[in-house]
Amino acid sequence: MSNLKAETKPLTEPLPGGSEPGTSVVVEPLLGGSILAPPQFFESDAKRLRTLRMLGIGTPKSKRWLVPIPAYLITHPTAGPILVDTAFHASVAAKPAANLGKIAARFARPRIEPGRDIPAQLRERGIDEDEIATVVMTHLHFDHASGIAEYPSATFVLSKAEWEAATTDPRPFLRGYRPAHYDYLFDYRTIDFDGPGIASYASFGRSFDLLGDGSIRIVYTPGHSAGHCSVIAHLHDRDLVIAGDAIYTQAQLEGGPPPPRPLDMHLWQRSLRELQQFARTYPRAEILPGHDPERWKTVAKRYE
Image (tube, rainbow, N blue to C red):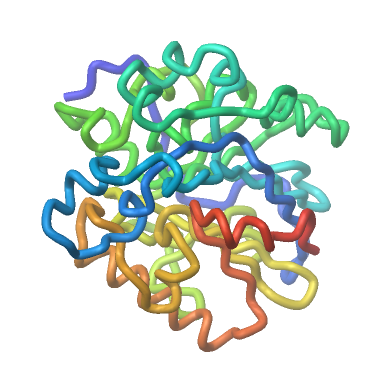
């Protein structure tokens, strides 16, 4: 059982603020920090001692990747600014261990460029943290949920399966969770992807229309974590898929090496196939992987 004081409410109907069917949105990828990690942490090399290599044993620092930790600002014409994931809390710039814990800080070498935390980037756009009414969480791993505390006025939306996993696992750190990141009396709304309000969308078997107008869909892509979700934003003439950690890298979308240790490899492969089918069916769609340093260099500042 969970010892957290945080509680959730089920989300079975779209949030208020939606517009006409077919409404499009604007998406701005934001770099909310980075970590230094061995490539084998993201793409398995299938060699012996794989776990040690995943942890960086035998990989010199010069061969490690500087990995982006992104968040995404979605601007909806009537619902206003919506955030997908929170990236690192601003305090990580000065004291990473205080927010992430000593082990994660030592292993991942997290960093934020001075003045480039997500709230600062929002303020540059004329948006105060309190104006973020909705935050969609792909999942609750520490690099995505670290900054939750910075949006106390927001409604947080995530899958029911993810919340249950993150709040009941007896060894959360080993699963990538830090409960202190989300143990707040905030407005958490959970989607039961086996429950009401769920429909298929394109290649995805289960999706939830966040605002009821087709502009933002949350699709169920478990495997990386118990209840991982991806987010599909409808642009003017195509879709943009924020894949989250359903794929770490562009190579995985294209059939390259899988991650070394997803929670459930079978579910990860099924979610990958849904993403791949979407890419084949809609070649003009933009699909953004979770932590690809090279792909991040090609990401546009603004999609509309």
